[in-house]
Image (cartoon, rainbow, N blue to C red):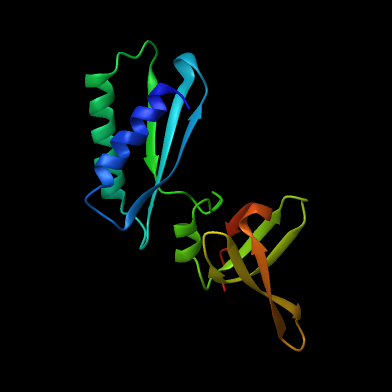
Length: 156
């Protein structure tokens, strides 16, 4: 992790310290030199507003300008993780209980089902095994077996 990312992580934590329901999901650094970009992904137990993302972005930008002497320009983006961004934290799994997800395991296989339970080490999916008879079974997976979990969106 670069020094800039370490500073941004610390400043983000300060910005969110007064709101227990908000949390930092990830900081992604892309490119280098004049094309450098840092993406800060924030979420909340009940979602996060655009206004809060703007507030955090302004705070971080101000501190970047005042406290760091950057040699190259840096693009900063603060947002919530989109639907295509995989779940990373236990809190994200918790807030998505009851939703349909697609899990890609480390071996490349995929499982779709409804997330019915989550803890820091495991998730439980309700997987449909017989569509005609509407029979499902619970499948417990260790988080250590999971490569990626994406929340599925239904437009029904």
